[in-house]
Length: 536
Image (tube, rainbow, N blue to C red; front, side, top):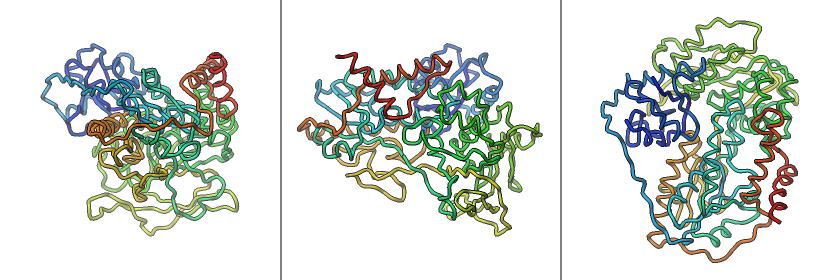
C-alpha cells in the first residue's frame, strides 16, 4: 500500500483532484464527502506517484514505508474503508474550477477573522482576477485556532499555516491585524469602505454545564485551558491548579483528548514544541497523574474521531483505560468501538500516568469552599428519542464522588452575536442562505454552520459563500465603496506579521523548537515595530 491517510484531514479534495487514478475517496459528489472524518487511499489502485502528498496542505498522507509504529493502524483503516465501500467506478476525475473575471480593483471585500475560515474565504475570493481582500482580526497574529487551538504535540497539523502563508502572499491580499470590529471600527465602516463584508469570526466561547459549583476556582472551560497552553494573548497569563493528582474533563471530543494528552505528557517532550513557556513551567511543577474523561453517552456515540483515538492508543508512557461499556454493545459496531474494545482489553502497566475514558456518566455538581475539591457524578443509560437520536439520561442510581482540584468542561464551542447582524440564539449562528445574510453581508466558518468539521471543512464552506457573494456582485446588488476608514488603533499589516513570525522562529531555533510564541502585547508589538523601522 504505497500511500496512507494518517489522520483527520482537511477533506477539501485537493488530493482527490491531484490523484491521476482517482484512488482517494469519498470524492466530491459522493456520500460522505465534506462530512467524513477523513479521506482514504485505496491500496489496490494507488500507483505510488506521490501527487497527493504535494497537494495535501496538512501533510496527512505518507508512504507506507515511513509510517511510525503508532501510525501502522492507518494501513488497515484505509484498506477497511474500501472493503465496505468498493467504489468500483475508477474514472479519473478532473474538475475545472470556475473563475469569474472582475475588472481590476473592481471588487473590494473585507473579511473579518484571520482563522482558517477567513483565510480560505480570502483564497477563494482571490482566485477570481480583479478582487482585493482585506483580512481583519482583533489579535496581532493571524491563523486563529490553527495557531492557538491545535495542540502543541500536533505540529504536523499546524503545517496548514504554510498554505495560509501562500494565501497571504497573493496580490490583492492585505491585513489589518490588532483591530477589533465593533470597537476600533464598525460594521457600517466596513460596508462604507468595501463592496462586501464576510464574517468568519468563529465560535469564541464555550458551552456551560449548568450545574452547581461550576464557577468555583479550578472549574475551567477547555477553550480557556487550550488557549493557555497555546499562548493565546487572552489566556496566556492565566493560572490553573495543577497541584492535584486527578483532573476531570467533561466531554470526549477531540479537544478533550488533546487536553488529556497535554496534562499527562512528558514535559521534556513538550519542551520541543511551541507550547507556552508559562504553561510548560506549570506542567513541569504539576502533580497530575490521572485524567478522567466523562461521556454521558456510550462508546458508540463518543465525539472524538478515529485518528485522534489512534493517537491516544499509541502513547507509550501513559496507560489508557476504558470504563462504562454498555451491556450488549458489539465491539464490531464501528471502527471506533473496535479500537475502544482493544483499549479496554489492555492490562495497565501500572506506575504510569493514566487517561480514563469513562462512558455512561454524567456530572451532578462540583463541591468545595472557594475551589473545586470534588465532582459528584451519576450513572446514565441510553435511549432513543422520537427522531431516533441516541441520548443519555440518569439511571437514578447512587452518585459517586471523584476527588479532584481541576475540572475542565469540553462540551462544545459557542459563537457570540456579531454586532449589526441577526443571530439565532438556539444554534449560536448567523441566519443565512448559502452564506448570504443579505446583499453585501456574508458569513463563513463556525459563525455560519456551527462548531462542526475540521480545518479544511472551511474550504468547501468558503466556496459556497464566495459563490453567493460573486452572484450578488454580478447581479449589481453590491454598492461600491464610499470612503476610506481610519481605525482607532494602528493596524498591523503583512510585513508586521512576518516580522513577528521571524522573531518567534528565531527564538525557537535557539532552543531547538519550532517557535517561541510572544504572548503579550508589548512583545508582539515590539517585534512588529521592527518591520516598520526597516521600511523607514
